[in-house]
Every structure is written in C-alpha cells, then in structure tokens.
Image 1 (cartoon, rainbow, N blue to C red):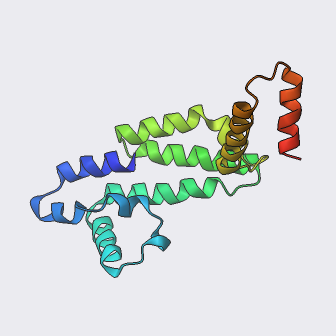
Image 2 (cartoon, rainbow, N blue to C red):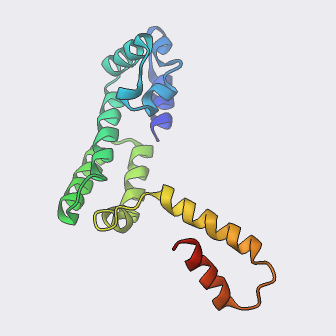
Length: 154
C-alpha cells in the first residue's frame, strides 16, 4: 500500500521533486530507527517535507504498529477504529481498501490481545508437522500420526 501511494505521488510530483522520490521505496518501508546512513535519512526527511500524503502515511504506519502492543481488546478496538477513520479521511483509494481489509480481519487482529502469538512460531510448527507428515508416509493410523506430532512438541 505504501509503495502504491509513493508511485501515485511520484506521478503527481513536479520535475524538481521527482529526484527525491527515486530510490525511496525501501526507505519508506523501513523503520526509522533502522535507517543508518545519513544520506538516506536526509532523503527521507526531504521526501516527508515535500509530500504531505506520504508524511501522513508514515504516521499511519507507525500508529498501526502500535496496535499490536495493546493488551486490552477495548483499547485495541478504539485504536483500530481511529486508525481506519484517519485513513479514510485521506481519500486515497489504496489506503481505503487497506483499511477495509483491516476491518474484515478485525477479529484476528483484536484476538492478538488475548493470544500474542506471532506468525514465526506458527510457521515453525507448521513446518515441523510437514516434516513429520513426509516421514509418516505409509502410516495407516491417524492416531499414530497425531501421537508423533505430540511427541515432537513435548
């Protein structure tokens, strides 16, 4: 979504400002704390100064990351509602579709408050089960396969 907005703003920009947009794709996707080179920090600062839409999108990006830190479902719901309202106020088509997608997946996002499991652990579990399944070729009993999964995560 950020890259789509960057492309649309690049097309709207004047010739003088287009040079600032070039090479900024990954700068916008990185966390500000991870931008180490002074040249890149300066380019990001210039880009945010000349383009209000991208500046607002970067603020939205930081606010959306903050939603994952809530422990209370009520506060997370409020924050997600405020985020979607702010995103809708920009009247950007790709940002609005992203906000609608977040609304569709609200239950999963909010349930992160109760079950703060990151996808890395889930991917690891799924990968381990796939390995067991490959080794289990020829098992005739589903119960035995289930016991092998339990044994792997003991």
